[in-house]
Length: 228
Image (cartoon, rainbow, N blue to C red):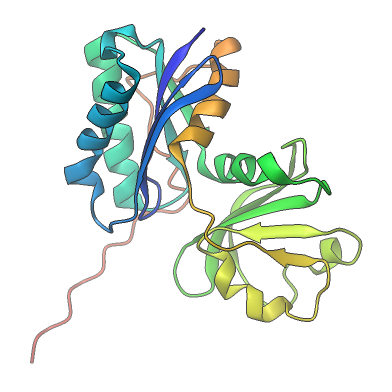
């Protein structure tokens, strides 16, 4: 019965969960921007207290590895690596888009295709396409959205679009009956935990020393505007 602490910090949402044998025992989520660095450890303490577990009793620690926010991913991965070193526990990395798709797929009775989208500024998103078995149809990529995006797929398949990048795609597909948009879908630690459970059973662990977030794109720093 693997006990896994899972952390999600890839967007503005900060979420932590503990799963035991693939079942969620405790889950916390905050929607405060720039809260990761100050409140992540508080959420970890809360879920540990809820489950009455000790950190030493965990069997693994999992993290949403990206793509997503550069800063958020860096904070989440650094925290998880620190825990794994201190506790001598294995580290499990979970693709953020796959975790989002898994979350939506918990209630997908029609077996629609799943297209998570994470905002990457302007009309660009991080996205992938999965079927209802969570098999990858289109790999994770950075895509600039326009009216032709996913056109061929939507001719014959229903596709669920969700995540904080999907809202800017919705106006481009208003006339497509097969394009279905779900609101208020945000990454969750519990979904990371469910996928991490499957990885644990396969002994699919990361090398703690060399594990890095999946940024997908290089970080580009912006200069602050001059105050006139």
